[in-house]
Length: 120
Length: 234
Image (cartoon, rainbow over all chains, first blue to last red; front, side, top):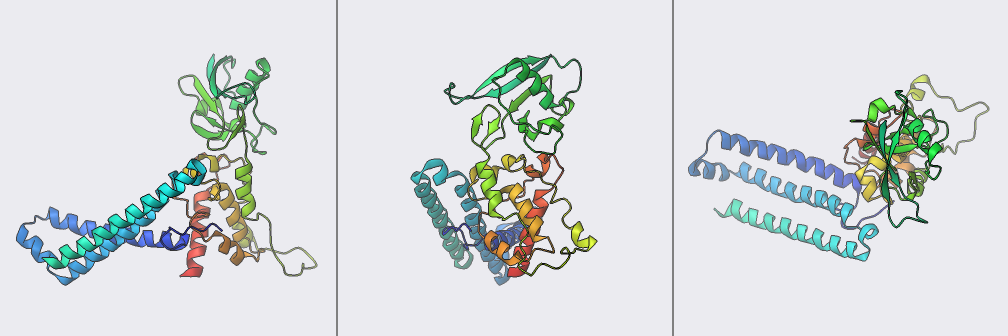
């Protein structure tokens, strides 16, 4: 059993499931956005769409899913290429710093996104 | 004349690995790659490679031929040679001992982790532990693995984490015992696999399926393991 304290849920199964679920949410959200855009959109209808509660909930859900999905995905990439086996202790430090940067970015997006969704 | 490019490395005399170009007279026949290597070795005895049964049973001569892993003894030239050129390298991702011989310790260490033997603490019955034909059928496509390491050494997840990811070969064997009706250690086996690396480093790219010389499907076995982990946890 290999443990990893920086993985999202400390369980491979949990991370895998969360990544799958978040992928479905993101796919649904971006299909909706694509459909709205292709149907033709102007400022008024765009604002009307985002003033509805269900759209704000759906957007927040997509934003949270993006954070989860990115954490699991980036963690997977970083634990492939920035490891103690390949780079010594530097790998561990670098991996942790990059993972924290990813977390900070996603947290910023989340707060900023909430601000946009409920601020206008 | 077949143009062969060989990976050569002798740690006692070479600073670093190098590629040796050799022209081989195949006599117009569609030889197996192992035969080509034997022809080369007859002239240059310093070339090192593993081989034993020469019929795809022992799994000794797993090599990278023109970029694809496979058993040299059952890979005909017609299947791998492009533009009369054949590039032969050792299996990727494993440390090279010499020329085409790799150190398989990491591969075996992962195999050992899955405890590839039947575990059953119930008292042994007077006769064999019986299986129905249906139960036995579940082991088809799993037990045939010959541990040649073609799959695991073609897997990027195994290249980067050979110490933590069990790899397709090990996981295929893991599922072989998880699926066995006579094995009673299913829960303990699953407990050991439920971490972010052992199973879940597999991203399903199916390089393993693409190269397996026995036509097995480790990706499907890994999917079954994942489903077993999921259905007991959900």
